[in-house]
Image 1 (spheres, one colour):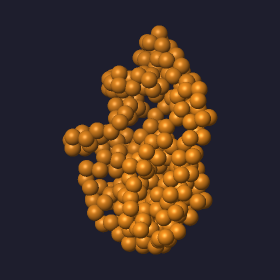
Image 2 (cartoon, rainbow, N blue to C red):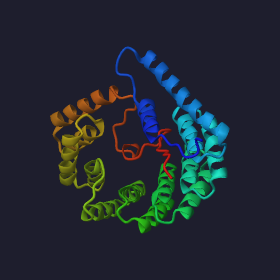
Image 3 (spheres, rainbow, N blue to C red):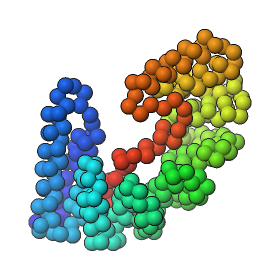
Length: 284
């Protein structure tokens, strides 16, 4: 009787709870409540599988639950079951591909995501994810080819445009980076911290006037982040403005000390989060 029953609101709430952090002194109690909530939702879907062992929603949602709680072995089990019993669903392969990339099984991830792209010939999602995986693993040439494939399907796919731009940045092909950013602007699109990337590129090609311009723009919008301050410090130092440089460096180091994952220079992680919280979704 559970075959067609879905509770997307519950999954939405689940993801919010799992990804949120306690901001007060009751962290242990809150964590305990979260674990109980996960257990209750998990038990619910386990109950569904007792009457319908091939139920796609139950298998997929259990995969999401265990992935978000850090039990990759069980998550893999349920995502593999979802693929086995639902071989025509591209989302099943996509989810399995993302999980395989998270646990380091890159060959399997490529197979899964290519299969997802084959089943859904209109979406750029799985091809883009493959591009991001190659970017993450320092294979920018291969990443560019994949992002270009994704853009054939959707020429306004901002993440693929960004991915291609960052691949050129990794290759130190800075003129290509500037060309890509201009194309993105011409499409009326923008990505986060675009000004920081431009400032970094202009700094590296020695155009300190434009580097200063874009670094200031980034700092005005992201003053709580250390990278813009640090880059500004370097620009001021090169320009001989030592007091301004020291002020920016002090600000950058102060902010970085308060961060659990401090970084002072531009990195791919600013644009793509390469960690266990990659998006695994439950929709078809």
